[in-house]
Image (tube, rainbow, N blue to C red):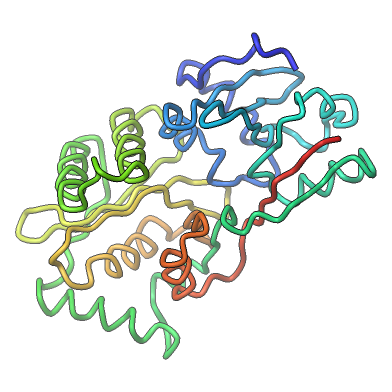
Length: 293
């Protein structure tokens, strides 16, 4: 693989990337342009455009490839894959991994990566919290309404980005982001994406206000005709039920035209996995780590 052809992810090439993104059969939240741009510095993300595909790699903390973006069915994988410098390919949707195994029998090792699976939820269920299964979630939403009145939900627009960044700064001070590499990296990603809000296709968000102050926000992106992904969600400490209410109203308002919500992966963090499971996922975008021999 020609290393010199790779260069940092840039928004100047967004039109070309979106054209290939729309051809990709499985649109993982990982591969959305907002995600690549947001995490570019943390992972040292680079890309190259070649043979109707966008090849992606991360250079930090070590060289690893990501799955290429484009029309997978049209690619000559038998000719393309052997040039990956013996580095692993991570975050590979299982649909693509199976195709590689069929093209290169006996040369593709696939290792399940549960921490990278993206959680898919029934959008209507998150918006309505029906029945006993969601009883605890609904109680939190009701508690928020009793404490602060009818929730003041507002869709995000360009003029509200400053409020979002202000809330994120408050959240980070409370959680001491500077002392946590992972929280510091997430904070940088949020600031990078929000500071370029108008440069991304399909980006949308919602917020909650209490007495004129933003207390929660959620930022998502249309992944395909049926799925809305959620990139970031934050709520201020001290407001009981703020996360459950933000989650519910975002699904109700911003997700109204979709069947599913993709709420990203758990990265093998046990507490995060338990929290995601309590919302009862209906499926996953399953991904694996792949080595080509």
